[in-house]
Image (cartoon, rainbow, N blue to C red; front, side, top):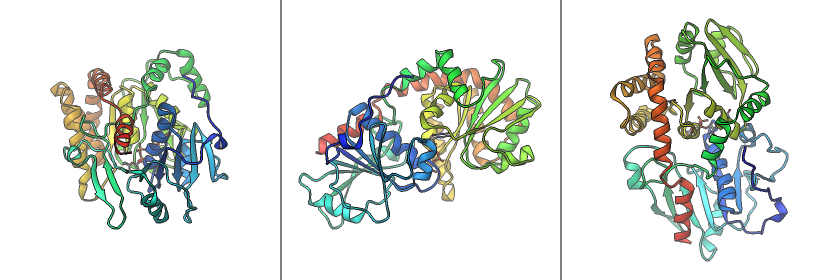
Length: 392
Ligand code: TRH
């Protein structure tokens, strides 16, 4: 692994930080996953003093085990982390303020922003979508109804006229170093308390929402011609998996049935999750952040999109498939689309798995090309820092 930059302690920092990032954990891990990644990159790639406000340390600690829940202020990986208490203690706002996913900043903090000169740049970091409207809404200003403040809507996306995707500068080098080093790979397995499966096995990672289609898949894998090793990091029990195993499973458990071996893993630290994606032949991912990281892994992926009311998520799913499959040969494109739709609909036919496996070599090539082309674009923080500087 490339070494991390030296970590400053709380006292090293000047009183007023460069950036404030606010994160409220609504559910799951996407909100904190994105905000933690963004804060780390601001500190690591841009050498900025970042203050990260998080309201739920229990969720945060799962992807950052070094977090001490007993400390309301601590510095980790160069980021000054604050517990966002219900009763907010007033502080001088930073020069740039990021509101993660419209998480609603404390009123006193917003009032304080309005009284500063120059006033901080206020950004609402929104959710990722491949839909066309994103280009039109990216960077739209929204004046505060009462105060002399403007909030800008920053939309991540896949097109050059959107906010782009989070991608730290060392990501590709770290991936190549890891995938090219047998020593690093075996250390990764060892630290998990596991060993690499035989090279003949297809290595698959699964991170998704509760989904009856997982049962279909596990049954198809059981009778697969090729051995399948499935890695499943869990933050909470998964009923479908428990039903398949006939008992309740926890981290460290292994199920072996026919050609299938399922290894239940602990929820791993965020950088280690990247390694898992880099190792696998196929990654099932979900939400937003793991979905993006699976694309940077340059491996075939299956996306379980976060379900929304009135099936709004399906439009989002199709918008992504349209751009992702544009350069993919027709036959593989049909297989991939059908499989993603079936996975999101909660039902996988046995035939569908066979077709996906047959398409894997082509999907692998495509994933490499997709990663290479998308990496040519400026990453999200490059765009965000540039925009903020233009407004300061
Ligand atoms: O957890 P998610 O489903 O998160 C979200 C939230 O539900 C959010 O409210 C919703 O709007 C959004 O999806 C679309 O999936 P996501 O985004 O992939 O976040 C998971 C994070 O957890 C990501 O940063 C990767 C990290 N992770 C680990 O650090 N270790 C692990 O073992 C695993 C499986 C994931």
